Length: 199
Ligand code: VGL
Ligand code: ZN
Image 1 (cartoon, rainbow, N blue to C red):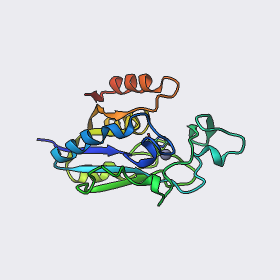
Image 2 (image 1 turned 180 degrees about the vertical axis):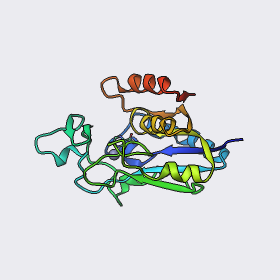
Image 3 (image 1 turned 180 degrees about the horizontal axis):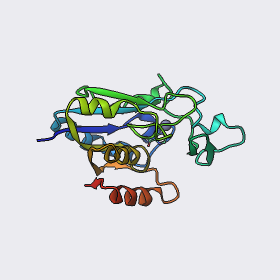
């Protein structure tokens, strides 16, 4: 039987209520995510991990505001409030997340000039994080994804998972969305069209 892993995306303080880029209800998923961590043999976490003055921060672009879009060398990029700065309290995992069992923590978004929503590739869709190789080498082919935010880092990760040859299920009850200009519906459609199972 295919080996399975739970991929827990960005369950960090800055994406929970009170955080710098709070996702509505982001903290509500923690009990369910903890239950899933208990059930899976293999658990991988991702951690959004930006240097100060990261190019995805609106504050880095004079005259720009959060949630606007800019053109970057690799394509369109949404600008965000400063969040998940390396070593800051906001970049820590949610205090109730039972993360100690995780076998790997993938940090992403650490290159100053490029954002990385996906756990597999940065936003140029070309620069790998190394996660695909790690999973393949370990014989893990069946992924269940949960976390924050459904329509950004979870969806990008799930799409890259199927495009990289993994099977991927997103458990929507264990995710919460930012939902910017209809992004949740758009990303759910795209995931379904590309073969991501939505559970
Ligand atoms: C995320 C926006 C910026 C996410 C990360 O985890 O979905 N969204 N950085
Ligand atoms: Zn980020």
